[in-house]
Image 1 (tube, rainbow, N blue to C red):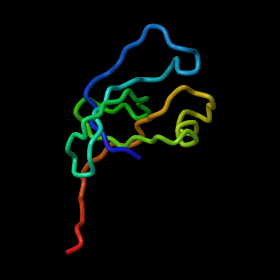
Image 2: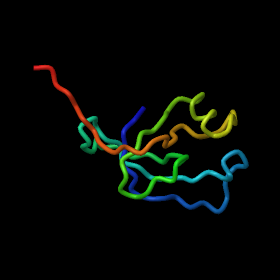
Image 3: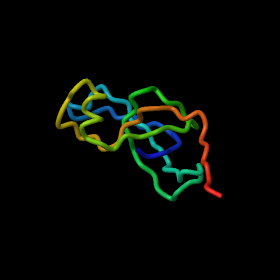
Length: 93
C-alpha cells in the first residue's frame, strides 16, 4: 500500500472498454510521516476521494481486480481504496 494526497482529476473522453467507467485522479506520493516523496502518479479512484484528501493506494493486481468487481486484465496499476484520517508513527525509545 502507498500513502498519497489527491491533487487533481483526469478527464478522458475516450478510454479502452475495460476502464470506461473508472474515475482517474492525480496524486502525489507521500512518505509515512506525510511529507511529499517527490513522485506523482495517476490512479483509479474507487471511493470518490476529493482533492486535498490523504488516501491509501493498493498496488496489487488481484486486490484491484476484486475492488473493480472481479474484472481481470484491467490496465490499472494503482487504485485508491481508503481515505486516511490520521497518521500516528510510534517510535521505540
